[in-house]
Image (cartoon, rainbow, N blue to C red; front, side):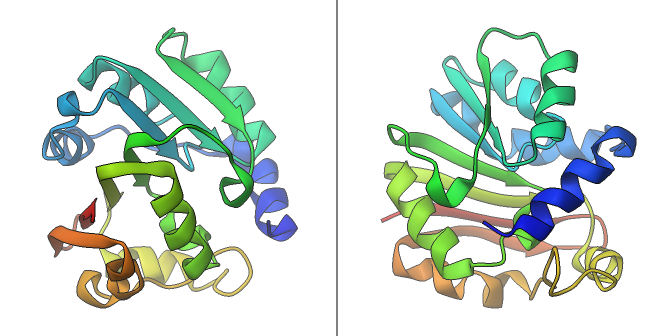
Length: 189
């Protein structure tokens, strides 16, 4: 785990605000999560989508983040019994396999891409869904991350290029981006 990233998110947690939007709802609706009884909300932060995921599936949502401060605020805000918050490093996280892993607005902070790919494969059931989504376009996102690139985040490539390391275990279902969103949706082979 990168202690700089953990410290960064613990420090910004109190002031971190994310506007809710129809785009988030549309992105989640496009994933057909009602077919996924168990979902890992990876890099959940303050739980921006945790409850939204719980409302879309019939099973459990495990909301995972390595920032104890982000988890603290998420637990205060969300009281849905279907959501379990876990404060742990994804690369060290052990669990039974999930039907889906949703990584919303967090993927650029996973600096070890090869480790991410292997761990996502280990934590997904066969035919499991992996979705990397952002409710902001890549150009705006990269502009935002330029100040911290290499320290707490990395710059995203086009979805077709960004998914190349994932092709070892995953098959692309939908790759897309615009000025307002970024999306990589894959199925475990």
